[in-house]
Figure 1 (tube, rainbow over the protein chains, first blue to last red):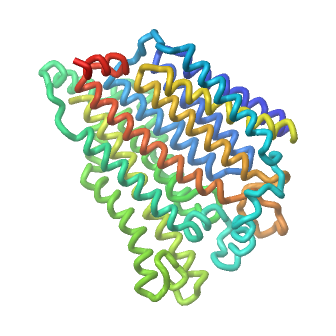
Figure 2: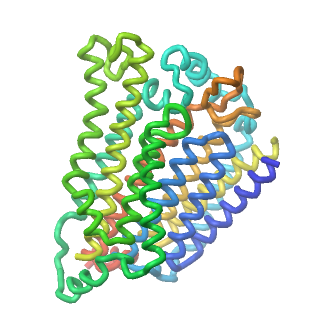
Length: 329
Length: 118
């Protein structure tokens, strides 16, 4: 049954991808990309990656769609129909596909417990995680503690990308005409005149926020953690902005607060690492944060997950506001 | 299970190349970024597929069940963070596209190259 379902989902995935590339309407392509993300999240879920599925669903289907739409509003909705070098590109792609397909015959069988990937550190993580960290979700333990350096790096990449978008888009556009300024007054209030989306969104926002906080603080026990929670909380505010207008959202959560949130989150992560050093252990070794090493590890993970959540929320909302503000300028 | 395994790898290969085609053949910069997203998702799928252990389950310990077989948590950790980094870098790319549109008035590669040649 799972096999059939897997094949079905994978086939849908390929069909969606082909449709995305073939359509000339970029709006349609972006919507299909949202569906693609949801399908791939389902695929992740049936091959045991619950945390990844949650992240992909929140980020891919939610936030990335909104960002692409924001970019489309600023550029154009249709692409030009002529495709240059189509045959040459097709030839290159077909050859590359054949090479990759040939390589797949050398790969270990799907689900083989003796595959090389399962032979190195992963069994050690699974075996020793209860002894050193003792939280049920091994993914969170590996993310927060065993691979804390990687995660710190990723948080700073997210931080840097946010700064980059601010640099690119916070300059004033050259032509702010009166016509567009007037259009801003009319369009800046979102969907406030449409009753049904407004009522539904207002009802949904608190629950999305609550779920985001649950995912943040329950990440040690079930699928979840700072990355997913950050994306969910950002999605709640983006929904609010789409319905009530961007200005109102900025009243609730001003830009300064978002910038502070982003910086404080990244710094909190670093500070937890430095605190470990000051207490006489290595950077990002949380064992010394409490008298009992296991409690120390758990404290450290909760703190760094909070930092991750803050940075991800801050960066995603800053990026959204950067696009939205450009739209109205 | 055997069939599904091969199928997963083949879907990975096909998705990878669909994304690659969009990146090299399409002129529109937003479409190129969409292609890049598909390419990226294909790589994610490969990693998660490799982490699966037959008969395994999601790597979360439960009190009342002992001796469970877990799938490999490591690829999941790598991909989880990669997804969030992916959206941030895509946003950066879209930011650059928006600035290009403002400076060149077009997001078609052909137009941009012509303007640059002048």
